[in-house]
Image (tube, rainbow, N blue to C red; front, side):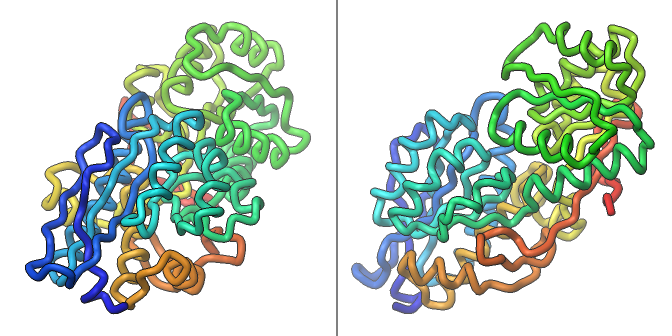
Length: 371
């Protein structure tokens, strides 16, 4: 089936989010309805990250539809980043015969919770942001990611702390979630003898005095936190209030301006790593002109992921199995960098960046590559 006969219109999916409605073909029967799906947090604490991704997908689809005879639609599924909510949404996706591919899931926990369902259904997926190392060790040949995994990020974070910062006593903290614990464990293993302890908090925990006390008792000169920006901001704030003066670092789950809003002055000097560079200038300008908002973390990765699916459709691949083969063999340059996949579905190469909080703001334009 060629692209001209594989066209796409959109029906509602009952998720409570607004879906893009693609115009129907002018001739009945010329185009078969096909859509991409997005699964991730579109509300809740992590909603800003999901919006970044969904907006990137939408821009790619809008650009494709400008010249396509058969239009592509987007169906959005709001998991709130919750691994317990994601499986029901994944079931909706795989039972929707109009969906030929999934951009997502957005988070590691929901990826692990839905990967088997997606694999058994044969539905190809490309995550813009899920980084847990074990996801691509499950044998799910339909699962891919266009971002470096926690092993690459964790090793780079350890290098930054021990070599660039010169930390000799690193205390590790995480919130127990799949992404958080995975990244924190890689950092702990990679800092080796510099590690002086590992504490755990719970998501949404407000009083972190036990961990703060453990950090100060260990005389740590650096803390690495695996988790998300809300708890990261609270943790560094409580550490500073206790008089701790060491280096604070977290990963991409905390790499958001909201970290600074929560941490306040205590966030000054914090380092937040991410396996993603800022959006290139030409893309950032195009994105803002098209949407009226700025590109954020993972916008470029989601845009690239969507464009891989759209390239498959443009090449006449209309069945999920054929699209999956196309993805596996894909090689190209996206706005986020060069993209190709290894046999497990990981991106073949990636670079990790250190973003800095300077003068009360997260500097999202001038990160340092960690080499």
